[in-house]
Image (cartoon, rainbow, N blue to C red; front, side):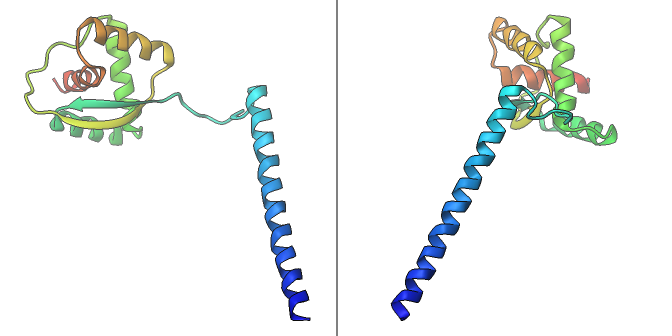
Length: 142
């Protein structure tokens, strides 16, 4: 009798595992269907963001952080706006007189087209994109 109860218990455990796995597969199929239809994030306000490293002076970074808090926006949106300003100008940021810089990370709110243009400007200036982004932040402080 005990063996029968153990077998029933194990069968119940296996049945619940199969049900959870089946439900997970159905959710994944639904997500892929929405993605294919282009409605996965329909009516959700998501901004494009670009994960990026920023080599920047600590003081300039603190200034941009304070400014973004004051304006009720993210640091990524603020730095992304500065990157867009330099992209619109079509020229790389001027050389920085700052000797020390820290390596920071932010998700910059920049559309794909402008980000590609900014990267091109940095390449033309023979400098890393992280340093060019840092210079755009440092130039804002001036």
